[in-house]
Image (cartoon, rainbow, N blue to C red; front, side, top):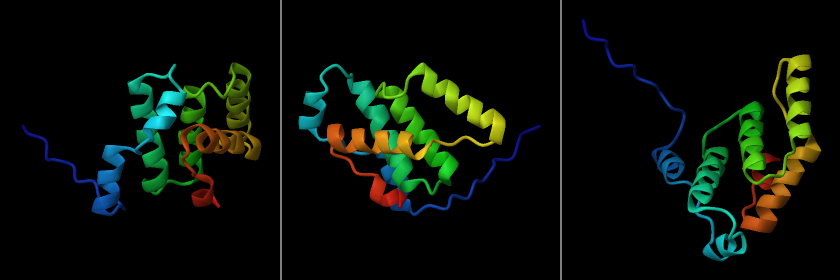
Length: 121
């Protein structure tokens, strides 16, 4: 017995899908400034940034991506993560505070020259 393929309809333009697969380009001079990060780390960050820009996510999805970026960049401490888990247990929703979001937006702009905040407003 064979399973029928599942067709998933995406609410994306073909160009957005291509951008998601390619990831966001991080300028070389910014990569050199952060010489402690590996090529894999930059590729991962680029893909997360592209998902944030083009994946048509709700706020919880955007916050999840920002959290992943924050953890990768070591901006969020173990205590921050515990606070997020506590908020999720209390409210039933995952979210970042305005301050946590701002910290990640600032890092992206300062260190990688990538601005996401304007998209989030």
